[in-house]
Amino acid sequence: MTTLRKLLTTCLLLVGMGAAATAWAADNNLPNLGQENNKTVVAKAALKKDAVCTGCHDESETAPVLSLYQTKHGVRGDVRTPTCQSCHGESDKHVKGDPKVKGRAAPDVVFKKGVYAQTGDKERSEQCLTCHKGTKRSNWDGAQHQNNGVACNSCHQVHKPADKVLSKKTQTEVCYTCHKDQRADSKKLSHHPIEEGKVACSDCHNPHGSTGPKQLKKNTVTETCYQCHAEKRGPFLWEHQPVTEDCTNCHSPHGSNVAPLLKSRAPFLCQECHDGPHNSKAPYGPLVGGIQNGLTGTTTAPANPNSSATARACQNCHVMVHGSNSPAGAYLHR
Ligand code: HEC
Ligand code: HEC
Ligand code: HEC
Ligand code: HEC
Ligand code: HEC
Ligand code: HEC
Ligand code: HEC
Ligand code: HEC
Ligand code: HEC
Ligand code: HEC
Image (tube, rainbow, N blue to C red):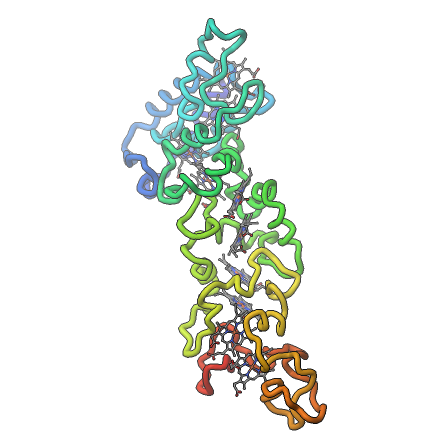
C-alpha cells in the first residue's frame, strides 16, 4: 500500500497538461474536461477502481503491471486516463469467480497469451479505440494491419515505461519483427538514415492506416517525399514526367545498392523507358565530339566512346533529372 501511495504522489506531480489535454481531446474522440477538475479526488477514485485488480496484481508479478503508472495511462489525476478495467474489461467473473469455470475465469480481455487464451485481435483493438479513434486512426478499419490480424498491442507495449514503437530510435525493432524485407533493404549501401534514428518508418507511413497507397502518410508517393525533399517539387519550366508521377519510378525508398537509392544505374535506368537510337547501344560517339552521338547510330569512324554509356552515362548531358529551368529547352539541361 505504501508503494501505491508513493505512486499516487508521483502521478499527481505528473499532472500539468492543460493545453496538451485540449489538443489531445480535439484529436481524439474524448470530451475536453479542462483542467478544473479536482485532481486529488479524481486520482483517489481511479486508484480505488484499480484496487479491484491491484489487490492481486502488483510488482511481484513476472511481468510487473504497476509500471503502467509511469506511463501516460497512469496519470491518475486526469479523468481521461483509463483504469485497469477500461482496457481489460470489468472482468467480474475473473475477480469474483465463476462457478461454471474450474479455477479462475479469464479476464474479459486478455491482450497477450499467458495462462489464458488471447482475446481476438479486433476485440482487443476495439478496447483501445474507445478512446483513440481520433483523426490519426480514422482509417484503421479496413487498413492493411487491421485486416491482417495486427492489433494495437502488436506494436504498443502499454505496461512498459518506454513504448519502443513511439521512439524513432527503437521503432524499427518493432516493425522489423514482421517486415524482414525492409530490414534487409536498410542494410544496403544506400539507405535513408533510419538506423541512425533520423528518419523513421512513421515519417512516411501511418501504421494506423491512411487514404494513400501502402499506408503512406500522404495521398501519393510524391506528396510523402515532398515533406522533406521540397526542392524536388519544383515548379520547373520543364518537368520530367516520371518524377511528378511517382518517385519510385527510379528510387527504392527502403534501400538500394545503387546510390542514391536508385533502382538501377544510368543508362539502364533511363532505358527502361527511353529506347530508340538515342541510347547507349551504339558503341562509339561521333567523330567530332558532340552531342549527337548515338542519335543517328551511323558513325563512320570510331572516335569517342559513346558518352551515353560511360561515366555518368545519360546524366553526362541530362543532369537535371528531376526537372529543369534551362532556357535551352526541354531536355533536362542545367
Ligand atoms: C483475487 C485475485 C485476483 C484479482 C482481484 C484479479 N486477478 Fe487477474 N489474475 C489472478 C490470477 C491468480 C491470475 C492467473 C495468472 C497468475 O498467476 O498471475 C490472473 C491473471 C490475469 C491476467 C492474465 C495474465 C496472464 O499472464 O495470462 C490478466 C490480464 C488479469 N489477471 C487482469 C486482471 C484485472 C484487469 C483485474 C481487475 C479487474 C484482475 N486481474 C483481478 C488473480 C486476480
Ligand atoms: C491502456 C490499456 C491497459 C490498461 C489501462 C491496463 N492494461 Fe494490463 N495489459 C494491457 C495490454 C495491452 C497488455 C498486454 C501486454 C503488453 O502489450 O504490454 C496487458 C497485460 C496485462 C497483464 C498480463 C501480464 C503481461 O504483461 O502479459 C496483466 C496481469 C495486466 N495487464 C493487468 C493490469 C492491471 C492490474 C491494470 C491496472 C493497474 C492494467 N492491466 C491496466 C493493457 C492495459
Ligand atoms: C479510457 C481511455 C483510454 C483507453 C481505453 C486507452 N487509452 Fe491510450 N491514452 C489515453 C490517454 C488519456 C492518453 C494520454 C494522452 C496525452 O496525454 O496526450 C493515452 C495515451 C496513449 C498513447 C501515447 C503514449 C505516449 O507516451 O505518448 C498510446 C500509444 C496509447 N495511449 C495507446 C493505447 C492502447 C494501445 C490502448 C489499448 C490497449 C489504449 N491506449 C487504451 C486514454 C486511453
Ligand atoms: C504497426 C504498428 C502499430 C499499430 C498496429 C498501432 N500503432 Fe499506434 N503508433 C505506432 C507508431 C509507429 C506511432 C508513433 C508515430 C505516430 O504518431 O504515428 C504510434 C502512435 C500512437 C499513439 C500516439 C500518437 C497519436 O497518434 O495520438 C496512439 C494514441 C496510438 N498509436 C494508438 C494506437 C491504437 C489505439 C492502435 C490500435 C487501433 C494502434 N495505435 C496500433 C504504431 C502502431
Ligand atoms: C505483428 C506483425 C507486424 C508488425 C509489428 C508491423 N507490421 Fe506492418 N504489416 C503486417 C502485416 C501482416 C501486413 C499486411 C500484409 C503485408 O502486406 O505484408 C502489414 C502491412 C504493412 C504495410 C502495407 C503493405 C502493403 O503492401 O500495403 C506497411 C506500410 C506496414 N505494414 C508498415 C509497418 C510499420 C511502419 C510498422 C512498425 C511501426 C509495422 N508495419 C509493424 C504485420 C506487421
Ligand atoms: C522515405 C519514405 C519511407 C520510409 C522511411 C519507409 N517507407 Fe515503407 N514504403 C515507402 C513507399 C514510397 C512505399 C511504396 C512503394 C514501394 O513499394 O516501394 C513503401 C512500401 C512499404 C511496404 C509495402 C511493401 C512494398 O515494398 O511495397 C512495407 C511493408 C513498408 N513500406 C514498410 C516500411 C517499414 C517497416 C519501414 C521502416 C523500417 C518503412 N517502410 C520506411 C516509403 C517509405
Ligand atoms: C522525414 C523526412 C524524409 C522523407 C519523408 C523522405 N526523405 Fe529522403 N532523405 C531524408 C534524409 C534525412 C536523407 C539523408 C540526407 C543526407 O544524408 O544528407 C534523405 C536522402 C534521400 C536520398 C539520397 C540518398 C543517398 O544515398 O544520398 C534520396 C534519393 C531520397 N532521400 C529519396 C526519397 C524519396 C523517394 C522519398 C519518398 C518515398 C523520401 N526520400 C522521403 C529525409 C526524408
Ligand atoms: C527518372 C528517374 C528519377 C525519378 C522519377 C526521381 N529521381 Fe531522384 N534521382 C534520380 C537520379 C538519377 C539521381 C542521382 C542524381 C545525380 O547523380 O546527380 C537522383 C537523386 C535524388 C536525390 C539525392 C540527390 C539530390 O538531388 O538531392 C534525392 C533526394 C532524390 N533524387 C529525390 C527524389 C524525389 C523526392 C523524387 C520524386 C519527387 C525523385 N527523386 C524522383 C532519378 C530520379
Ligand atoms: C519511368 C519512365 C522513365 C524513366 C525511368 C526515365 N524517363 Fe525520361 N521521360 C519519361 C517520359 C514519360 C518523358 C516525357 C514524354 C516524352 O516527351 O517522351 C520523359 C522525358 C525525358 C526527356 C525529354 C524531356 C522533354 O520534355 O522532351 C529527357 C531528356 C529524359 N526523359 C531523360 C531521362 C533520363 C536521363 C533518364 C534516366 C536518368 C530518364 N529520362 C528516365 C519517362 C522516363
Ligand atoms: C552527349 C550528350 C547526351 C547524352 C550522353 C545523352 N543525351 Fe539525350 N539528348 C541530348 C541532347 C542535346 C538532346 C536534345 C535533342 C537533340 O539536340 O538532338 C537530347 C534529347 C534526349 C531526349 C528527347 C528527344 C528524344 O530523342 O526523344 C531523350 C528522351 C533523351 N535525350 C534521353 C537520353 C537517354 C536515355 C540517354 C542515355 C541512354 C541520353 N539521352 C544520353 C544529349 C545527350
